[in-house]
Length: 213
Ligand SMILES: C[S@@+](CC[C@H](N)C(=O)[O-])C[C@H]1O[C@@H](n2cnc3c(N)ncnc32)[C@H](O)[C@@H]1O
Image (cartoon, rainbow, N blue to C red; front, side):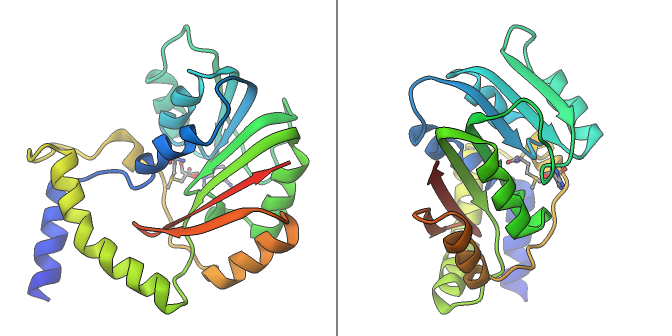
């Protein structure tokens, strides 16, 4: 218990976003230039602003109006970016999209329906990238989870350059929830709805999924 308490105190002192950690990886997997992108559950808009460095137009949607206000406030007016308060599982405007991203949001949505919805709204040749959270239900994932528990404070310390943070980053103020779909069920649904998708279990309680239409 003492070790866990110490880890929790360190994590609170040196917070960092497990989601933003994957943004650079997402960008590496996308084309140099693309036309239209949609970020589903965009939170404070960090990824939206990154996508805007390569896209003609990026649209960020989130069901939480408070975080959309924060995203708008953090986005320079000259970026090709728009935001809307909307449900990511049913939003059907502005498509088809060349890129759809969805970071730490899929577990907020009905899984099968959301994957089918994203597939329908991708342009031919378009790319869907999901960074997601699933319930750990195999020993490999439990092991990755354990390694993550130990690495988390080290990463946090390094990312904060050894300085205690006064407050967590804005992105970490977005709504969160615990995933209830087990990873093995997620794999089954992905294979059924997005054949050929590349799915990998990652550190820091995340998996990644890439599918090209
Ligand atoms: C853990 S945060 C991730 C935010 C952002 N993608 C990031 O990586 O920082 C989950 C986000 O999903 C949003 N969300 C939850 N349910 C949603 C829904 N049905 N449609 C759109 N966004 C939703 C929440 O408001 C929250 O901003």
